[in-house]
Each structure stands twice: as C-alpha cells, then as structure tokens.
Image (cartoon, rainbow, N blue to C red):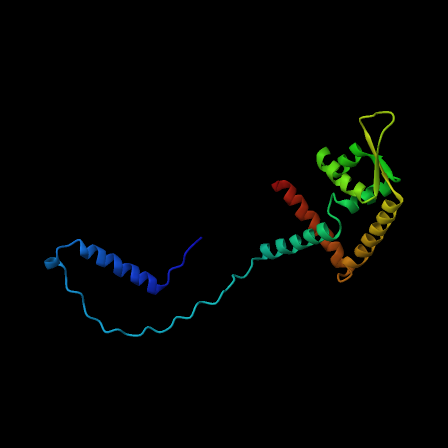
Length: 189
C-alpha cells in the first residue's frame, strides 16, 4: 500500500530529523533555534479525483470487452449449458461425449463436470455405448429438447435485433473491421 504524505507531515518529519541530529551534538555547539511566529496555514483542498482521458485503443478494447462479456454471460458462454444443448439439438439429439468435447475444445474432466450438472437438471442422459463400453453417448431428454429450442429462438431474436441500430453498410464495414482485428490478434498470439 502506498502511503501519501502531506506537506505538513513531510515538514514535521524533516524537523524531527534535524532535532535528532542536533541532539547528537554537544549543547554548546548547537545553533540556536530560530524563533518564528506561529502563523496559521491556509487549509489545503484535496485535488479532485481526475481520471486521465482513455486512449482510442483503450476505448476500443473496453467496447470489445463489454461485447465479449455480454455474449459469454448472457448467451450461455462458449461451453456452458445452452451451447451444449443447442449443439446436441443440431446433431439430432445425441452425440458421443468425445465428439462433444472436441467440438468445444474441452478437456474430458471439464466436460464431464458440465455434463453432470446438465444431467442433474434433467436435460440430458448419459449412457454407455453398447459397442464400446468405455464411450458415453449424450442424449437430450424431452426437457432438454424444449430448453434447446427456447435457447435457439432466444439467440435468433437477439441476432435479429443486436445490430438493428447500424445501417446495412455499417454492418458490412463492421464485419470487415472485426476480421482485420481477428487476423491481427492471431498474429500476435
């Protein structure tokens, strides 16, 4: 923690240091302390909390960060419950756990934890593949199918409205600009 020192504190510390140094000298060699009248110091007002103006780059990153945060937390995240249910729906209602994990680039342990929560909610069932007892098949339940359909409809409604405040030309320009940003960031990674 950084401790800030006011001018008064700094002056008092300097004065104490001089007094300590003077105490080490014999009394007859000490200079006489000057006599100064006690004057009232004007009250100092603290500087207002001024934030520096953000740079253009900071504003762009904040905007992209907000969009990423919004999509992750309001659209189910990349590997959350809704994307998994939607993926299973698009695959006809079932898929192997291995294939599902590769589609989301998840480690088996992480996927298993997510699937356990979805299974506990009654949205999927996991069964052993009769041809390979080591493999698990993931199947949407009726409730899971209904939730997947609701999520797909909500995502479609969001996509239909998300960029309605931009003209078609602005949307086309945004696609190009985001492509440039993505390419550059991939180069930097």
